[in-house]
Image (cartoon, rainbow, N blue to C red; front, side):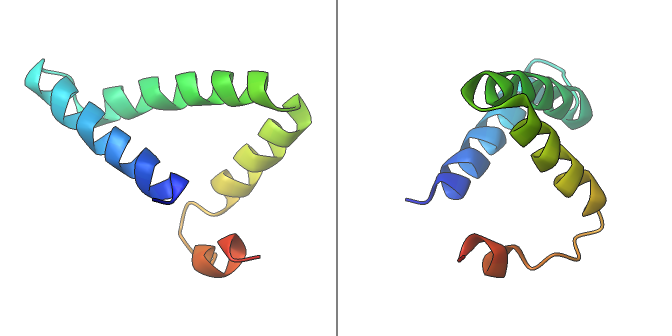
Length: 72
């Protein structure tokens, strides 16, 4: 299984569990983002984390062909 599929499944599970406890998707996703960014920063160089975040923020509208990018 691809690591993106694993991450998506984990997020869906977290959203369902959080909703059962009364938390909104926005609140839960914010918590996931904060934790994921901190963990990524510890797993790699801070510059790499910053570059990844800048790339993702610049593509919030979804104009990048991720299948093409991931295949490289």
